[in-house]
Image 1 (cartoon, one colour):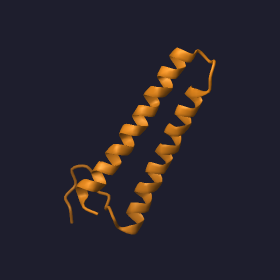
Image 2 (cartoon, helix red, strand yellow):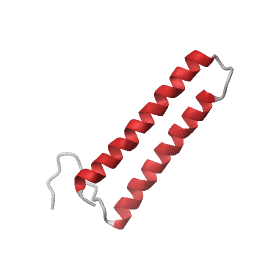
Image 3 (tube, helix red, strand yellow):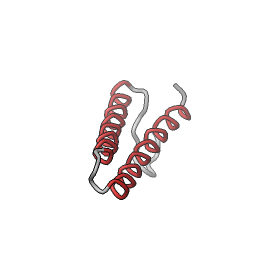
Image 4 (cartoon, rainbow, N blue to C red):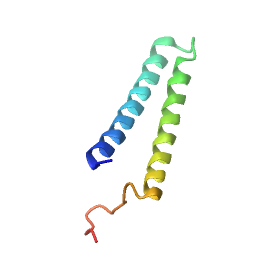
Length: 75
């Protein structure tokens, strides 16, 4: 998998996470506690966040990506 595809995958995850956060806010303001749409949107956001973290940890362990510090010199 090339680097741009990896970056695109992470950015797509982040966009969907922010989208679900916004949906939760919208449902909270519109529904005023009458439905469970807010809870469902925020639950999806948490699940996606955990999935992204696990995906990054798996990618590091498998050697697909290599972590580096900001501004550090590569070896």
